[in-house]
Image 1 (cartoon, helix red, strand yellow):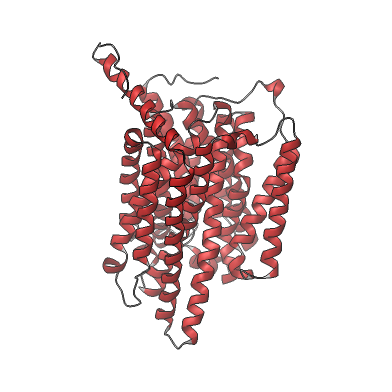
Image 2: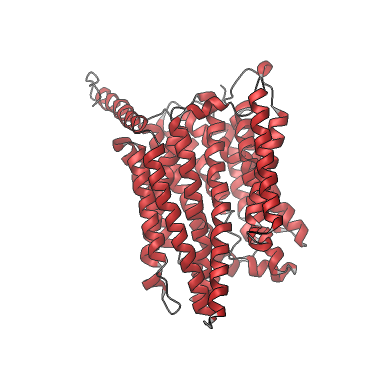
Length: 498
């Protein structure tokens, strides 16, 4: 290890600030361009079908390269890869803001996604290697979860404000000073760490190529399913090709002496369960932001700025709930908190399914959005803690890459499924003579019902797949670690844990 002294709470808090700020802009960039799309289309003369790739190019590369990014952090140095990723992200943001053509902007967004895929798992693995497992790490991941969870809502808000007052270019330019600040602070605030000595490090190139291509093709097939048709031969071939590549990756890893992903990590039952729940979290929640934005703008007639401001209560509830979640995990363990969070999300999405074509923000959106924010905060933090708990230090980057990948692939899958359901339900309503507002509302409502089912399935699978023993042991260990600290501060001998 090399770098600054992180023995004081202040030094650790400053390190966490740098890491959380990174995750904030990485998450924001998946949603900040949504409300700016009409302005971007008009400025660069991009048709509606191609416009979706301003968002999809980022999601595609981000989801495809996360696993490789996480493993590169373990091999080449977590701080080093974090800085490389953020430099790439900032440079691509600057290039995207100056874009003059459709291709220019889409390529810049793809490079942004690559930078994010390198930086995000590196940042999460630095959190887990900097903060001791237990109450200290729970608190750090609660702050991380609050910032990351609020990023989706804040992206829509910030996108609306910047588009309205500064121009669409600023949804990209805003990243540049933040990325520059983070890269400047990283050597002063973060400790370097890696898996092995340099002479022993070898990267599994065939494994890296097959899993990156497989995940990218899978995300591509899912995000383009709305355009190509969910049941079309094009979509089926893409998904089949992705599954073949992922199967080839499994074969390569089983035969490799130094695999990219040692499958021994999946012996950890809680890690397996957390990744399944992470997939369903993405499926139920990521598309919620997309559907609510459409309802606010297309049905209720809100402007981009007003639609963005409508997300403020959701963002605040995520931050507050995530802060509570860290303390609850320390006291109760991660399993009951995950289950509670997923049930809360399910209730919120079921409530959203009651939206009305002649509704209002206060009557139809405000309360369920606050409830959804609470559910997201209570889910995101304990799922991340569960996914990282019990893993070896040298596998921190891999574990963070896995949970990030599960959530991103889940988000792409959920968006593809729920968008298709919304579109087909809307078409059916049109055929029965419904007005445009009624037909659109019917589509969104049906999609929310299915999203609620995903969330409840996540709660059930969390109860089945996540180890109660691991959850209880985590809570007991957190209590033991916090009690001696308090005792020493009073110059008393440490007490036994509960």
